[in-house]
Image 1 (cartoon, rainbow, N blue to C red):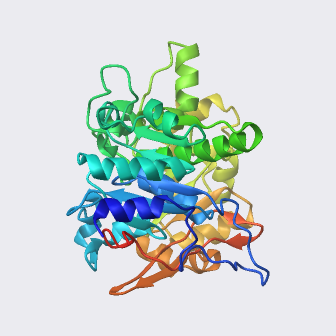
Image 2 (cartoon, rainbow, N blue to C red; image 1 turned 180 degrees about the vertical axis):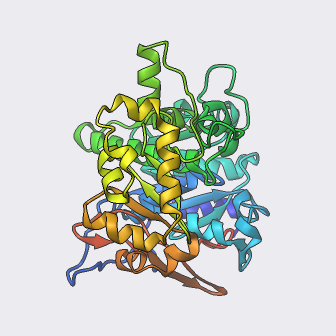
Length: 403
C-alpha cells in the first residue's frame, strides 16, 4: 500500500482511540471522562509553540495526529535540548509530542496532498505554524480548508502575526523576546539585556492557541460553525507585559528604569527582590519596609513609614537588607520570616527543586515508555475533576501510524 493509499484509508473513517492515550483513571478510583474525548486534531506544526498546543489538547483527551515530512519529520526531532537523545529523537521532542501519532506526507506531492485534504475533511481541529504565506501556496490555508470542512477549527501560530514589518522574520523565541523588549526588563541597571532562560514566548503562545481552539470547539457545539484561531509569539509576550504597557500607554512619562542588583521588578519598590544569604538566595516580595526592618534588627528601616521613601531610597534599603541576610543561612532566615507571615521564598536551584519534598508532593512527573524510549517527563499541569492527566506514550516514531 502506498503512502497516499494509507492516508486515504485512515481518512475514510472516524478514528478509534489507540492504546497508550491519556490515562482513564486519575487520582481517584472512578474512570475519568476526558473533556476532549472524540476530538481529532491534525498537527502540522514543528518545534515548540504549535506542538505544545496540540499536546495540551491531547492531554485533555483529543486524538492528535502529526503530519510530518518524509525522511526528516518535525525538525524538533533532532534539535536536542542539552544534546540529549532518547532513541532516534530528542528528549525534548518526546516531552512535547508524547501521546501523539505520526504519519508522513509530502505536501508538495499532489497525491499526498490530496490524501491529506481527505484527512482534513474528517478532522475537528488543524494546527499549523508555518511562516505567513506557506499554507496559502500549498492550499491548506484557512480559506481553502474551510471549503473542505466548514466545521473545522483552524489554529495558527506565527512569530509576529501576518502584518507589519516583523511578519517575515524568523519566529524563534529569543528573537521574539528581543523585539518585545522583555530582555530589557530583566537584570539590573549595569547589566546588558537579559533574556528569560526558557522558551517563554513559545509556551505562552501554546497556551493561548489551545485556549482559543477549545473556545471555538465550545462555540461549534452551540452553533455548528467552525472558525479560525490565531496568535503569535510577539502578541503573547506583549500580553505578558500588560501592566507595563497599560501604564506607559496612559502615561507617556513612565519609562523603564532598571534598578540595582537586588531589585526584581522595574516598577515595584523595596524590598521586592532577591538577596544573598550565607549559603544561597532568598526572594522577598511585597512587604512593609518597617516590618522587614524590625524582624531583621535594622533600626534604620523601622522608621521608614512613608512608602514614597521605599522608592526614593530603594537601593539603600536593598543593600542594608542584603548585608544583614549575608550573616546567616537561607533556612535560618526563612524560619524567622515565615513565622511572621512575611512573603518570602527560597531561591532553589534545579537540583534543589527536584530533591525538595514540595516537588514530590505535587506529583508533576510521569513515566513514558515504548520500544527503546523510557523517560521521566512532566505531566499536564491541569487537573480535571480532581484527576491528574497523564499518558504513557512517548513521541511517535516518524510515520509510525501510517498503516
